Amino acid sequence: MKYKRILLKLSGEALSGDDPQYIINPERLEQYAKEIRRVVESGVQVAIVIGGGNIYRGSEAERSGIDRVQGDYMGMLATVINGMALQSAIEKQGVYTRLMSGIRMEQVCEPFIRRRAIRHLEKGRVVIFAAGTGNPYFTTDSAASLRAIEIEADVVLKGTKVDGVYSADPKKDVTAVRFTSITFEEVYARGLSVMDLTAFTLCKENNLPIIVFDMNKPGNLYRLVQGEEVGTLISSDSE
Image (cartoon, rainbow, N blue to C red; front, side):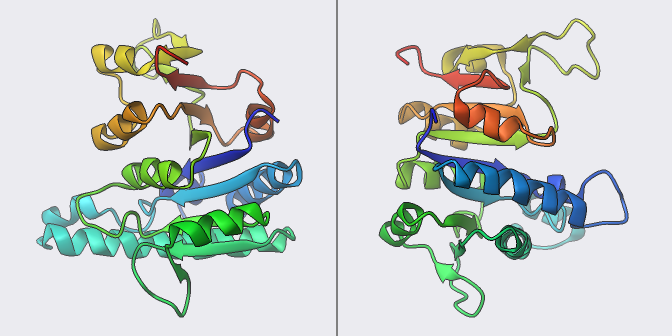
């Protein structure tokens, strides 16, 4: 396998699938769990950061008259709910997991401790990081970059509904071109939307590559960790 340790970033919206009646779609959850099991069985250490946008998005709190900081904490709790659902689905596939939270809530998950997280990964357990960074005003993208750096992951894999990074929105511009690889500097220069600026800068400054790929296509995650060209690789000039 090309990568020994990966951090997989999943959005909360992805868990709801295409059926509007579900907040957490059981079929999508099972699909993701099977994809993750296959990668774990190949010997790759897997950490996951999951969003909470299918339940609540903290950045939208002020529209509802809720204090932004309070809203962000509500969003963090939403990621814990998603993390618990994903943990249950993965364990049904026979894979050991640990759910770690940036906010202390020992009844349902462990507090995030860097050395403990690394030890879990070394033992072959999937580690799910919930509650973002534990701080308001930081997105789960920022949490993904930070946790990946802390656990010394080889790459951040951003699983989305699209198959990579395009020069423009492919739904609006038929001339949009998908990049197979691009540098951090080019993403800045072109003003492309990949992750929020804090998360993206963290990866750039720590030479941590990002791969944006379609998580919903069966087998994509496994092909990616094998080293196949899947999605768009974003890296520094020196890599």
